[in-house]
Amino acid sequence: MIVAPSVIAADFSDFQRAIKEVEKAGADLLHLDIMDGVFVPNITFGPMIVQAIDAISDLELDAHLMIIKPEKYLKAFIDAGADWISFHAEATDNPEKCITVIKNHKKKVGLAISPPTPFQNVTRYVEHLNFLLIMSVHPGFYGQKFMPENVKKIEEAKNWIVKKNLSCLIQVDGGINGENACVLKRAGADIIVAGAAVFRSDNYKKAIEDLRCSKV
Ligand code: DX5
Ligand code: ZN
Image (tube, helix red, strand yellow):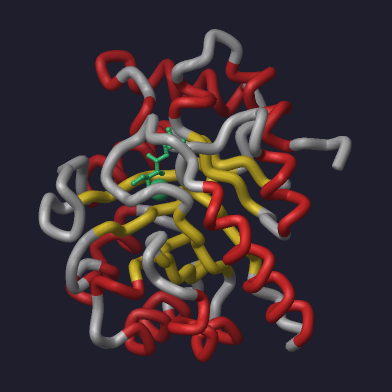
């Protein structure tokens, strides 16, 4: 399982140290939550901070865009150094265009769906994706409680991907910790995002190992 710690839960007053520590602790990917205060009721940061993170981190950057009309900002995040980019199906009228732009820049493209959005709404895009991001909390804040009803959606998506023989990975994000990660792995998750479980723990390495769920 790929583990992507989400820096939104890091100590921003000592950001560089937190990023370096999580790299050393074995993180595979760095998840960056981009929130615009419109699509979600919270604001985080934009391309300038992504660029600063890119300058200090050796890890690939996974930008999760929780912004309306993502098509307007894709290029800015690509130029800032994002290697993986996901946008929300609920935030754009033109997912095809977003997929094309991200792919044309040779970046990994992901489509995100919030808890109320059924998998059926996005099946037609899956063959074009590198990953599908299934949210297991309502997007907006770290440290929320995992919504177990989303496990069924992971199973449904995995079965569909396997049946169609596609290479799309499943990323799951929100409320994940060492306790529920194995259930998600069994259901078909390939990439686990975790904010609080890593950055609010006192042992990043152990937190990441637990999330990897190696025994399953
Ligand atoms: C929620 C974000 C998540 C979240 C992860 O809107 O997309 O990435 O911050 O944090 P935890 O793991 O604490 O839920
Ligand atoms: Zn996220």
